[in-house]
Image (tube, rainbow, N blue to C red):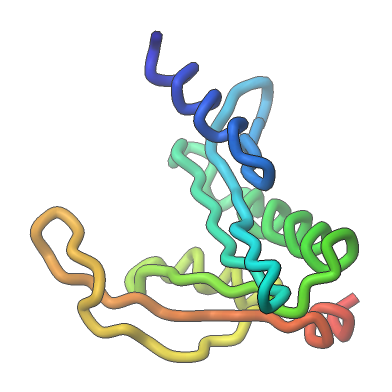
Length: 131
């Protein structure tokens, strides 16, 4: 099985995972991991193809997922973690209404180097105020 088909099959196997398609090809994924216990979800999005970066796709995807999270699933909170050096993603999340809550210093070991995560969230009332 080729790696692209395997990736797409893995993404689509989960209920709240979506393939991001652009111009007829899969360029990334988005997902919500919902906790029914406290009515919240963790959000993650990744665009694997750097040729599409800077076109506003991350913002559009995030807005659509937040619309689904708050309007269809009636969640109270959506949160995420993003690497501190990923300024483009942080700007996208802030544009979509997320607030920085804190950092976890050197909590992620990536390619032999410890990196810092930024924690961000948006609440249902903050989403509604942006509409």
